[in-house]
Image (tube, rainbow, N blue to C red; front, top):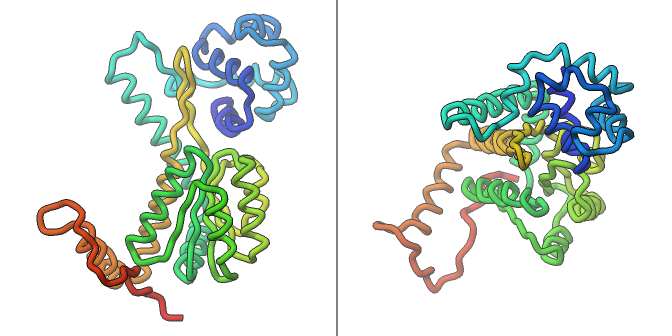
Amino acid sequence: MFIVNLKRALPSLTHSENRIAAYLVDNFQSVKDLTSYELAERAEVGQSTIIRFSQKLGYKSYKDLYDDLIKSSLNDMDISSVSPEEDTVETNEKLYRSYDATLKEVMDYNPVQTIDIIVDRLYLAEKVFCFGAQSSNILAKLFTNRLLEIGIEAYNSEDNFVAISLLKKMKKNDVAFFVSSSGESTVTNKLARFAKQQGVTLITITGIQDNTLKRMSDYSLCCPEFIIYTNFKSITNRCSQLFLIDCIYLNLWKKDPEQHNKSIRELDDITRPEFGGLPLLPDEEFSFPENHRKK
């Protein structure tokens, strides 16, 4: 189906190809009568770009894309397109449906067995280093905090020098956890290669398409990214990545809920005194909550 193929190809599309995608979605009804030449003219791209776009979506030619497009229902398309003319309820409903469709795909793409293995590796790790470049590091940092909450020694840094220094200290039973939608971030992949040289287990969350980071990974979870088109910009959401992070976190917590709850309470006592606000740390040296795993 066209919209599924579009979502899969999204991370690899160029700026010009994104313009084609936006035009197809925004003008779904009228585009069914356009030749490749006419579509190139409307989207303000070269005709050769239309052919490359079609091939990136998995079609042999524009004709194959066109044939699949006319079979698609309007309902398949309109959840991806937002117009200035629609009211707030309609926009919110489209966003809700896009999230719902994305999470259903996440469940389909990621076997429970893979999640279970990842949870086991994280549970047994001495240390976990989490990383993502640019906006992906927001999720890597969030996952770091999740792990610290339940007493797992975890680190995160956006600084390349600090990241390499931390990775140097990791051992074979440690885990590097990387997030990258494209799987082609230069800095992420350089650090991933370095982590592999250290012999640590590399776990990743990346896109559904084949990519460099996925090929390096010991275990990888796939995230279809949903695209929301407007008249001026395309917006991708990261709900699928956040969903997988929370799946891992909750299943980790289930490994030893009593000890994990204790770790959460201890951190609460440190960071949330009786009526709010961070207290001054006592003179004695601060340490992580006692590691809950018996080696």
